[in-house]
Image 1 (cartoon, rainbow, N blue to C red):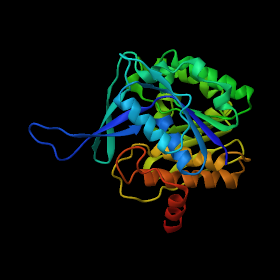
Image 2: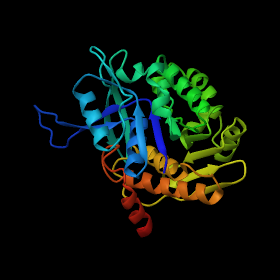
Image 3: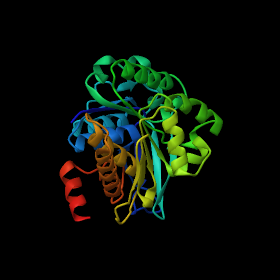
Image 4: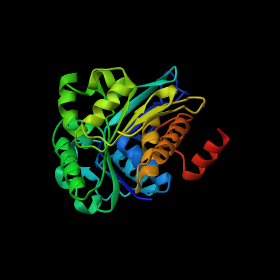
Length: 314
């Protein structure tokens, strides 16, 4: 089983507790951020994992680092930013099975200060896959750090997995997002998107058409998460769909990250033949379902044994 290196944002997800009063509004902080979730999910599934990002020298930064390290994630490449730069907070509200985020960030925020010099051969050496999303591409220096990671991964012959994770409200415009994202689509061996990202990103709602577009741009494997409908996968040689596992959804935060991590761990260090890819997507779909059964992105991420037991029962 190989090493997964995830780069990008990490935040403290803030959930309002139910026992509020007129004079108190208590909250619970839970670590989050897609790349950090992927690193933790991979570690719980038995893979070696490292996270590269930025946190503040503050209460929440300390909390996040403790959480990552307690899961066995290598945090030696995490940048600690001095005040007034702070760790980003994302207030999470759950409504009718979906979640909505309100961000509180310093300007710049700690995760935005991930720099090219933070991406070293040492941290990428021995990796079987390098993963990142689009949020660091919003502006420099984080954008340049991701480009450096992709270049270095190419030199080390490490496949790149790009989880688009488009958050349109964080960008100046949809056009700016597409401009920044497009070059990385051309350089990634695995591209993971959700079905609702296809229209703004590729101008189509057709999953097979979108997958073909991405394959023509150089991807070897395209993964499309379909929410309650499961997931679709495509290579130049084959395509397929995996149905969703039925669970009671409390909070879908982190489900896509659990899906990606479980898929990457299964694909790590081997040939991507059809049987292996289908099993990877099936395991990813199961991990994503489990992640929906509790609150927060990391708390319900399954271990390898938990994933195996769930798949046997379902």
